Image 1 (tube, rainbow, N blue to C red):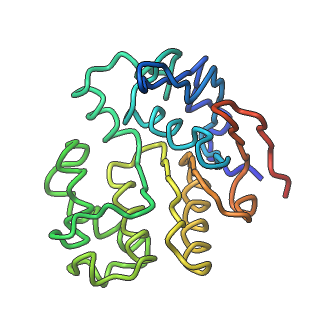
Image 2: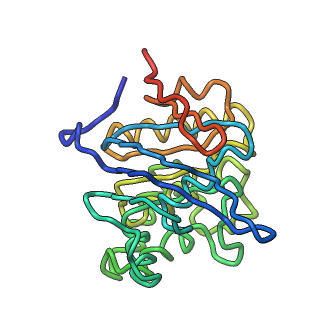
Length: 238
């Protein structure tokens, strides 16, 4: 079942003839070739495939962390491939929340400060509202009582929930998660995926790279990559 809000059906992400090659030992290695994909607002998409299939490269292109060799990436009707590095960083901070497998929280900042930091970078919210918003997000993920703890004082599951709250700091329409449950036990992993489902119900689009066997329980569509190409795009039936 696809969880959309009142804007359901609108295309949020469009990839057109997207390819990526790397130079290696004097030759060109093609990692992705001619990827064409549309993802709607509120959709939960899993990208799966064996190691080396191009999964991480694909999400690095979508998030602007890496640059494509050819093709186009259009998000919310805006092509991002020709943005300067500074413009791309500002755009990414406001439009994409990224959740990493290893959390990537800043260890010397408490968890409230970790969430305020992306707001400071993008100026999406006025300075007077940032701390309150951080606390609202921590409450949303059930961690408000731990606001002033350093990340090391939290469990892995708690740190990943903080990472999701941080990814939501600037209220982006798109969340991209690279193996977000890879370091978690099954109970914490299920809680993280349920949180993603709640966000999708509110209209957030969720793209997840996953090796989880039961990922179909938590997504609307599974995109399978093999040797840099999309080989299947299957809708999950309830």
